[in-house]
Image (cartoon, rainbow, N blue to C red):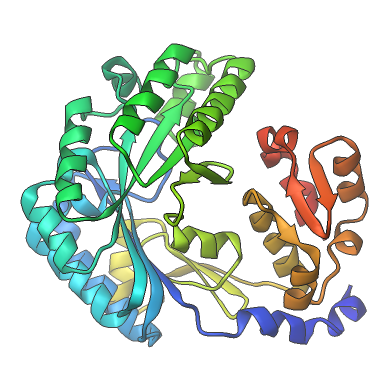
Length: 392
């Protein structure tokens, strides 16, 4: 391995040494932890919000990454859960540290109930261009089963307010809720389309270890839907949205022409990015660092002048190349083998060897005209392919 990597050491710096053009800020505060959620968040601790903003400022100052970027993303938790004055304070801090280039994309995640006239105005004044709204469903029974507390009318009102300020609007939807029927999912898709969003993300419900739903699953209190129905719902989403004029550009993401999420496109192309906040993970110059997930630990460390980093990984050239393949294949257009070689110095066919040939012969991948892509069949089982691609 070492001899094989020597000639590639410069190739790693070739695609990781440039200053990242993307930045992420994590806001862990939320009104409630939904049963399926395993993200870094904290509830019933509004007393920590001011200290958290101070900790963010200290982390930014300690990193010295000040400068313009082309994409910003504020995620959570629920960033819009913050009181209006604190939300304004945090967004101003972020924009001062990472000013957005002209024509750049500034996204923020939001819950429907949080979108008021005053908060929409704050987002607009701060330079936000895109709002990702956690609709999840338009069916009241399904929303309750997903542990969500908003209603269909809340989503419609939020979209109306956001349209007033001319944001790009993305809606998140979940399919495969316990006991969900296909017609419920079909109705969710149709209701979403009636709101005329610019972007849609559709996610199959998963039972992640450590979540309430996982605990209920292993104790037999809830059951996942049948695998065949889950696949039927995924296909239904693709067909319905494509027929409505949306481009299916990533496994779970659909956009109207010109409205892809540019920030996430950077992730899928393994471009570097800055990141601050509890649980935030950055990728700069081939080094991946992840902060402590505990909000209280993150705050304590920052206020004490300590590093918030919980883990640090210096990726080898080969590991970076393998990750670049996995992320790149999530995009429906796949990977250009020649572009990949120019960027990394690695030949995809030689790097992946047997797994690649096997997956092509099984019909999960297609290699034509220098382009490697998931097939329709591969799209449905893609998560099972990636582990073999990451083994060095």
